[in-house]
Amino acid sequence: MKLSAFFFLSVFGVVSFSACKDDAPSTPTDFLTNGVWNIVELWEDHGNDGDPYEEEDNEIDGCVGDDSFTFSKNGTLTIDHGITICSFDEPSAETAAWWLSDDAKLLAFLQAGNADTINVISLTNNRMELHEIEDGRIEMVVVLEK
Image 1 (cartoon, rainbow, N blue to C red):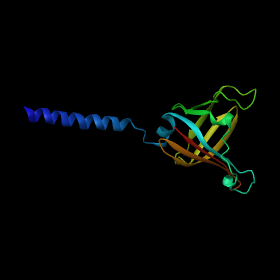
Image 2: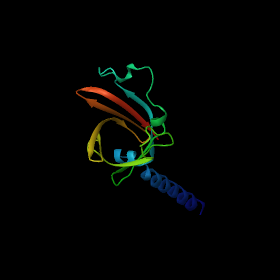
Image 3: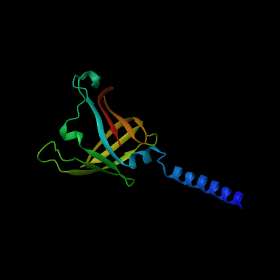
Image 4: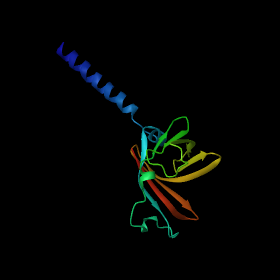
């Protein structure tokens, strides 16, 4: 009888562990839609030479540093501008449509009739790095984390 109880508990433990493992995000879309993203680094190429890191400081200021981004599986992005707003007419939150390319290399946004794409350099469950590239040079680097 002790062997049967041990066997049952062992099988139950393996099944329980496997069930939890399946719930973990495993695709780039799952990574995006599992949690709230916050900007931790923002670099801009003010010299137009393709080197956004030449400036001494990371460009997260008060009005951008408290923004958060929530990607929904239905293709809606919610941008919460936090407590500190950048301009008097900025809403506290905005929405946009988003989609990720099949190869997970481009993230596209559509907001108020304007479409933008940004290159996905890396995307994991907890961190993503995005580059805005124009005319072959990096104009902006954004790093977000959960």
